[in-house]
Length: 326
Image (tube, rainbow, N blue to C red; front, top):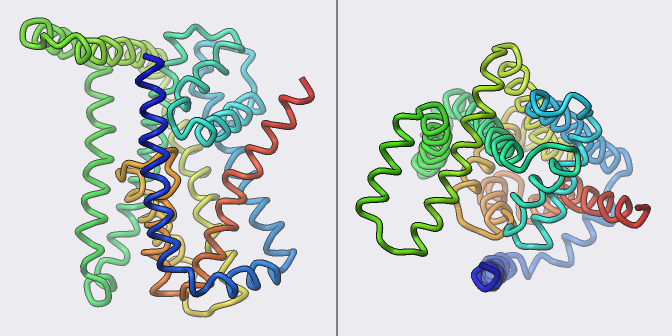
């Protein structure tokens, strides 16, 4: 298992370097202007971006608290925020390999069983992806006519992202709620799957599905909790989606609030189905693809760097400081 994890990190790193290399090729002639743009960033914009990043984490903390409430009555909103900080930190330093383990490990420190932590992690992902799909569908409907006239090639890509993300959500929910289906899948695998390595992955997946089933059943006993988790995820994603508009408002009048909101929602749903380590590389690539035609290369890259500063750099730094204090 350790050998496989090392190879996965190496492959992720290679993929990341390839994606970043392609991006650098397209923006290398604008690097000087980009750094000048960042240097001249207004402090009001910088603090607004940081505030929205922290607001995103606050709603994330509220959502995680509601998700694990049935497993730990003492789990606080701050604990939920720290869970998110740890996830972001370990997603970067392990190139995505240790993301799930970091989340489950943090839950374990708070007295939540590993099986419950696995279920809570899966439910956390389901609700997060549901919020992303909700915004993407709403914005696609709202901007469909405009995109059909200006960038018709985007519609197919966005639909693919929405469909693949929705299939992931539906698969996890159906498998977690249907014990009969779980049994049928296991019987099929026991009969036809002979490869030991593949069987090992299937067994791990089955454990996660069983844990998700327990988490789902625990939450479904209280319908209000499901609604709360979903709404908190809408709020956290919404706070994130406001950041690009804040970055652009000083430099360009070519993009409105709702257009910026729509483009970042399409970016998230598309980058989520492109394989890349820790979401780094694919997100940046799609972000530039969405925003560069509207705002220009310099503004698009500058806003991207500010966006990543608020969503990753500050969170990782907070986690490092907390670890040093301990």
